[in-house]
Length: 100
Image 1: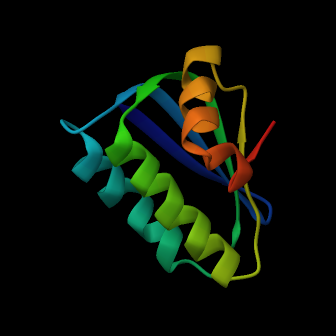
Image 2: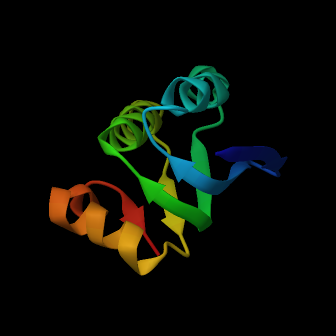
Image 3: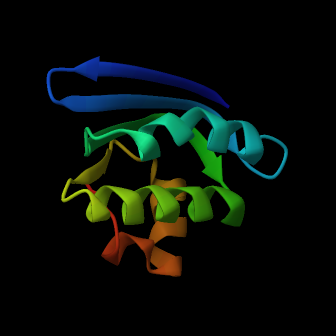
């Protein structure tokens, strides 16, 4: 999984490429930890390059969503591939996280 994080104005832009699974979930958690410690609470995740997410990945997204909500911000995931969106739909995460 390749993670790119950029600050654009008051929004943090995150781009994901590859598979998010148990082999790299801990690295992904390290990558997003600064986002959870930041006062900047609006995060947009570009998911076009994300091929897969496991339950470990879903857990990370849930942690990020809870943190963003606690800081009165908004988490948006966009351009999700149909097979990844299906995982979010089946697990109910589509009702928790805004997906465009």
